Length: 545
Image (cartoon, rainbow, N blue to C red; front, top):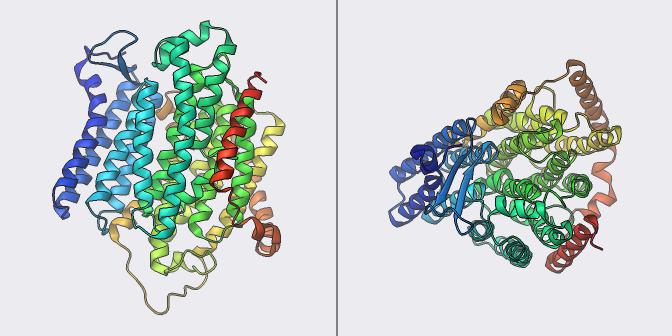
């Protein structure tokens, strides 16, 4: 373990939070010309390099900092282990790609200010051990996201931003209740120390705060039925493409990370079966709603709901939550979280570019992207193959490990969920082919946008071909793939593509059911009621009621 006495590694923890905030302030105070944007990208590249260095340090042991050198329950601690370091590296890399993508955009100082503040808040969540710090950082990130959703000040954006804000105001009350209960029980807000107290206490004492915090997590991760905010935030018409990519790729992963940490803290009462079932339901509901959409951004938004459900299912198949003893299914869930950031980042960035080039987001009105804009089209195709789980692409590796050792029933459910994803992206992939209708005017794609999108697309392929090595590299755990098992999964994939194409051709485009649910929306009142229902469901799952 690296402690306060190991100056270079532990001091790095504070820089990850402070530097983005300082850069944000400087960018806002000074005129945002090309030179300032160059500095912003260089700083972001430096943060990414520092994140990689921190990651290499955590392979040797935890990096630990007691802020102010208070070594008691009153102290505030920052900790980077291998798990948090992976999320920090993913965050800085995604923000770097977003910065490159947005370099030549007309976004002003406020945009860049908010982006760096947002990054600092997310990194803080991955580093802190203090429940109150998480509360503060989550609130900061929420406000930043609200402003970024409303950035272009269109009526729809303002509405979507307010819904996101109000539903977070409601659910944060449950977080505060859970946090206060833990402080009353353990006398500290440090998660590690609180976990030790909870482990030695009567499990019934921990059930109420567990239910409160897990309801908060369910909304943050858009699990059914608390997913209504996500399409509004991720698919908001005028929200910048980079914002949508980060929301889907990284922001929602902060909820996945907190889920893992809270499960560790509440290990005596933590329920894996409940979140396995909820993850499966979320994956199915999300993919059905994705298939029903015609707006390319909403297809991607609802598929995020589905993919997060799949991640939760993978994390919950096994009871093993403590680092050092990962099961294959847990590793698969974690790797899918990383992969989702890659292929969904590529898809949202390319969707932003494509919608501007064609002047529409209607999946039926966009054609010929691969021919007219080959770089964007090729990157989009690689990302689609990644999310579908095509052999040799990253999604196939994470899905393989998620179901390793699972029951035949869970395997069948996973195949069904993957079939839904395949149908949704067969529909989405129609934009790549056919004859383009751009009214005789061909627009040039910004070269930096092409670089950003292509990098993410190629990464989908590289982290598939070298998937085993990537998992071993990221999680310091040796894994193996059974050749014939992978061949079997590949055969299932190709069979699913054939079935999916037939379903798409003969059912999807003519289905009255899909047309009816296309605009499904619980509304603010429905989501508030759903918060109460999820809270009650978690209590039932842990045996209180």
